[in-house]
Image (cartoon, rainbow, N blue to C red; front, side):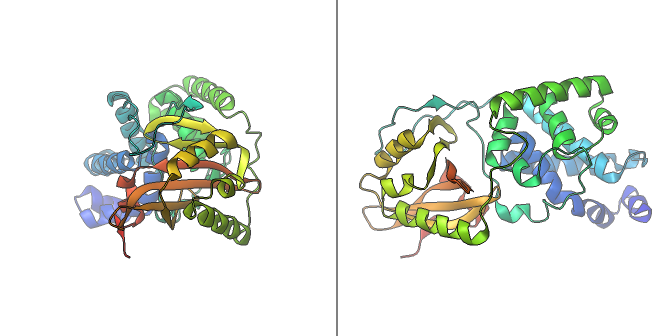
Length: 331
């Protein structure tokens, strides 16, 4: 390691890549948690690597290289959060569908899903002993959305302390803050998450085993492709939650979600192509046009628990390339 650092500090780009490549995937996930957008996370990661290359000469090894990289990445994300104006929610734009009355308007409208293929190895991080969240939970859409409501400093502190388990003294050094201010920010962040996620009691909803999940997903796909509203609703939990970033409309409960699906289906027939996002099943949805061609309509992510499907999220089809999904299905 010391030889690689010396070579990289002397300008050896291959040595720098050898140093940073093992941390690249986890840094991308870290930036995604903080920014809620895969594209923004990619940009922040590139800024991090450029900053690390330019600043490596000043790296003196007082902290581990991993901690040093997290310091750079976290501050790049904080800069992005502080300098980028909040994007306005997008207007309703689903053609041919009148917007049903939403249950509420969401606070976080620009959330994006994270492809499962980019999570490989991200669940095997060397977490500190103080980490409070399981890695599966900490990459879920619901958790990442809840993080986006926090002020930037609180968000950074909570991710570094409760998700990754960095010691308070290291987090204070990363953020150039006192240990007292870090502790205070963490307390406020935890309080906010407890209010916005009242069902969390330290335990995750029970997971299905692979066979049971496959069976439920198969029933969901069959009902969705058949435009069987009652069949889809039967698979949902009573408190199911549906969102559609970047449109702010949200629907809560079987009735409102079923009403939305009834309007969405109409005379349409969808084809679903399976993928995975944020640790859960997801689907590229395609709808046939008058010419019979099945074109990309949206990405649907679902959260599956032992009680049924508890969350449905619909995202724009512009994200298909991240998931290796084609814009048009072959006939």
